[in-house]
Length: 98
Image (cartoon, rainbow, N blue to C red):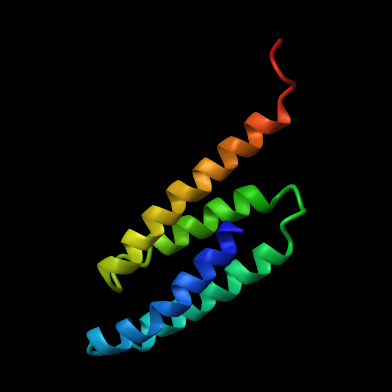
């Protein structure tokens, strides 16, 4: 679910990037590629390797900071959300304490 929201947020970032940046081509391409990666990973969410792959995706979004600081900031926010989701998944997989 978090990846779906991230894909939506990235798609919504295309228009402001095109208005703010003098040369928006690189940012637009990066956003589209990252959005497609989010959608693909969200579709494969039942696989065990999705959690590390999602973490790599978050690092890739943060790495877009040189394109515009807002992309990096969104990457940090979604990385924190992803880390929390991963933590909750681990906690729910453990047997309950009695």
